[in-house]
Amino acid sequence: MTKIAFIGLGNMGNPMAANLVKAGHTVRGFDLMPETLSIARDHGVEPAADAASAAEGAEAVITMLPAGRHVLDVYREIAPLAAAGTLFIDCSTIDVESARRAHAIAADNGLLSVDAPVSGGTAGAAAGTLTFMAGGSPDAFALAEPLLRPMAGKVVHCGDAGAGQAAKICNNMILGVSMIAVGEAFVLAEKLGLSHQALFDVASISSGQCWSLTSYCPVPGPVPTSPANNDYRPGFAAALMLKDLMLAREATATSGGFAPLGSAAADLYERFNDAGHGAEDFSAIVRYLRDHAT
Ligand code: NAD
Image 1 (cartoon, rainbow, N blue to C red):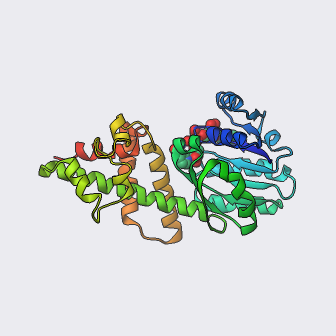
Image 2 (cartoon, rainbow, N blue to C red):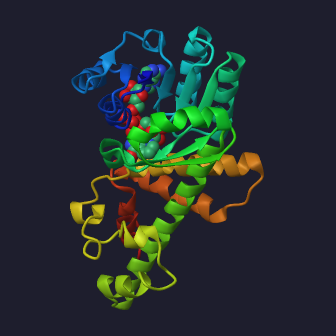
């Protein structure tokens, strides 16, 4: 069993760390917010006073933090203190540039590293069914994969440093665009006097079929488990969708890509967040579309 330091014990990190403890690993954790540390203690995580003491003697360090600057701060602080060969795994969703910089900090200190962002949300984190998208060398991935398993449904090695973040950003750009497309179709159906169920019954077995429709339908009724049936409680908050679409827009600009629909989706989710809906599930965008129909 492995000695793991877990830095960032928020909505995702806490249940992920709990699953590592359940799998028999020794987990020492740190978060800036003391209340998250006491939840972690209840799950069998040993609380540490700071990131450096969490990482002391650890064979692997896992980070689950809000953004690239937090990850780089933590890497700059603790990578120079870690024993050679310690494995660093960053599971946060961050920009590809920062992910590559984090790998470089690790390499400069003789450490192996993997970027391994996730999809599956807090429910997947609690159930241990997250999809991990990993980037890093084959050697680093081979060491990371068994540590990710207790938290995972699937673990996919996407390529070298930063490839996990690239896969996450591209996937979520598809998701943001497709949710808006499905929402627009339901609002148009309403205007045309077509019932939600009739549109669902046709599109779910026709060429309009997609995950946003069949697993996460943004109107109540056709998919009873979707947040639309629970007053759009997240699920996956609109603020996080905006974050991911902004990362996609930034990556499109820096890589010389062309993603007009991804950019339009970012604009729409920005307006939705600015209107005070950031804490709602991202599928609630259908209400915003409906409210703006004449
Ligand atoms: P969160 O805000 O609940 O947790 C982040 C934690 O990091 C907070 O508790 C914060 O105090 C802590 N933190 C910040 N800086 C720190 C530092 N320097 N040292 C120690 N702790 C520090 O966020 P979350 O929902 O757990 O998301 C974490 C990451 O996972 C984000 O990158 C997010 O985009 C990604 N993600 C979230 C979801 C989701 O559904 N919540 C799904 C997929 C991916």
